[in-house]
Length: 77
Image 1: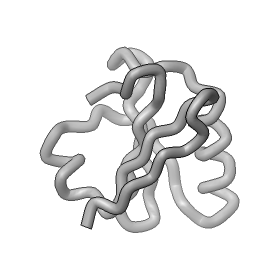
Image 2: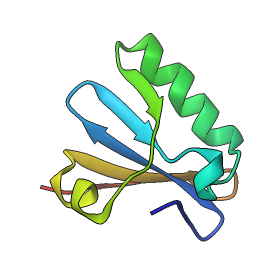
Image 3: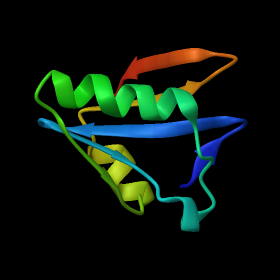
Image 4: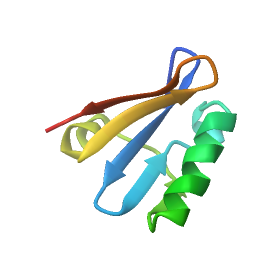
């Protein structure tokens, strides 16, 4: 998983945020950068790493970010 249609995907697991790295085909997203900064201010760590389908299923939360859509959030559990 690298991105949505014009959006970045962010996975939440505990106090950690993950988003795929640019070399996986992810966008260099301005809104994702803002989520990274805000998350770190709130005590979350942030890492760019490849995300598998299994990790999406096991995540606490998953959301998309994008300039046109803002942040689209849906609880996974």
